Image 1 (spheres, rainbow, N blue to C red):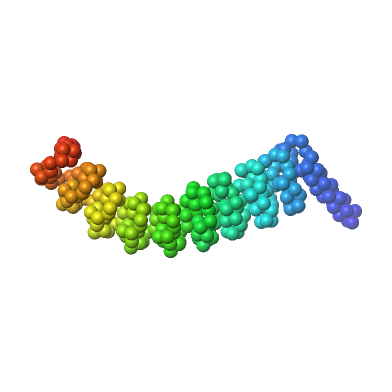
Image 2: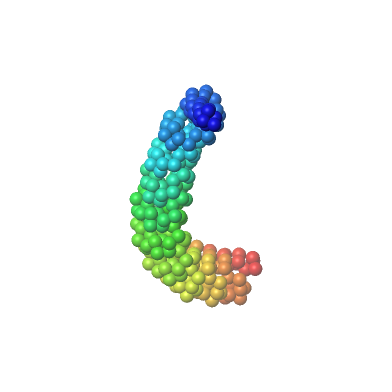
Length: 277
């Protein structure tokens, strides 16, 4: 019995030694990969991940590594995207993933993969403050679900694009109204207006916003012929008046406008709309 155990142990050691030899010395990368799949020794896996010339071998080793610090270094330093992704996929700690994002902003896809794994909105919020790349910052904001954090970003971030990204994920009508009325950037106000449901506020934006683009977005949501008629009569911008005309479906209203208005271009748009109806 003892001889059998001894023989079995020697056989296992021999097999392990052969596997290790293949991992480091086999010419064909597939042979090295096959051997790696049977090895759990973390130090050997680390050495292979750090030194093998073939990306697929390094990727296979990385997929079997458990040490978060080693994985982070691979994610930050390996020359191949697939190896770095393999490391990111193994990491679960939000702060570690955030560190990878901050240090990898030249690689959008690695950052996107890391952001997709961060489930802590506080960590994502901190990242938004520190990220410098516009597209990666957008992905970070899009990964946030906490409405309070999104509202804070939409109200206070200095970059109107970032405020817009946050705004797209906000559902509270009162916050959308506040931003539509008060943001200093026309694009943000227009985006908030597009998402409004309150017709009184939408009408207010259509008549009172200083920017034609915002008024235009408000007009797109109005169906009341009387309101649209007033906009055609009063708005100073041709594009806004044209948009209002395009939304009037009542021929009588259009004919009434035709009898009142002298502007050649507006008259032509009214006639075109009448022809469509």
